[in-house]
Length: 409
Image (tube, rainbow, N blue to C red):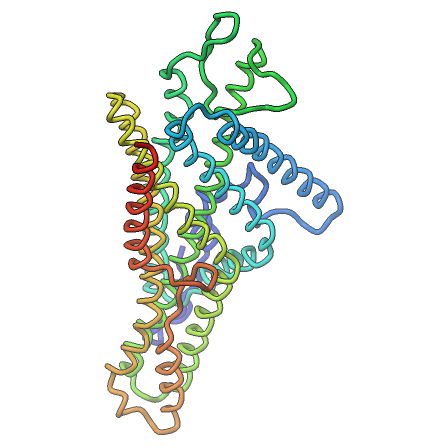
């Protein structure tokens, strides 16, 4: 419910009583995915019992992730029969490593990320007009659509890869001439044997559960990034809209309107800086590791096609498409953030600035100067996340693919 507080002013004051549900709508997917693994930042307190529970939960989840990844790495380095088999499974290892990186990033930067999410709720609560709220909701829907598209593609490819492909693969022949299905993650558990029933069947299911947990971590952090960055975009868009209408109501309360614009512009800048400082390692990991994942998945598509395994082609193609969508979406929202943060400076030039009283000119100049250096997402301060980065990922992955094909000929 949006209640009008004053009908006198053209820019009437509003109070958003549904700010909690608005925030919940924006963050629901990330909350559902990250809460089971213990890294959703908006819960808990400073009590000793909570801290014990938190450290215990995250420690157990991390050990389970390592239980899946480490034996898988041991197998590929010491037991893989040929280079082709190694090339087809390494993408899963890198994806699991990416999930662990995101997991620890969320733990290390929990307080900063919690601040960003609390600030988001405050901004929904303090929105001043119906038009501004609609801008925020529109950006929330865009972020939600990006997330759902990525989830459908990734889960649609990863779950069949972990469940159906092992069922359709060639049987593993044991020394006593009995056979069994290959594990979803071909692994070498050094200290115990996993071939005997029912331990083998239990491990088969456990690997699927653990891989789904890593998948949820990757998707949850991605959803959180999309929500936060799109919210930052809407903050810049709202400031720009108010700059466009700065002179519509005359110059009587120009100082107050300038003060509002500058305050909210600086709030948006600080919000982006907090996101950037908290997650730039994740951005770097996404761009580099996704490049490697894409090239190995592309190789998997080619090998499945050569072996006439059309179901495998579909699964690998779905996976590589989902990773492409991941990188493209991250690059797109990074590009949009840069564009929106610079537009307010362009609007400052296009308004009738020559009618502004001399005492207010410094405020306008301040906005212009700050907008000359747009806010960006960076990969650990090394390069900007933009559509140019996406093009670089595509070109680099193809170069790696050609190199791998030369190795496996």
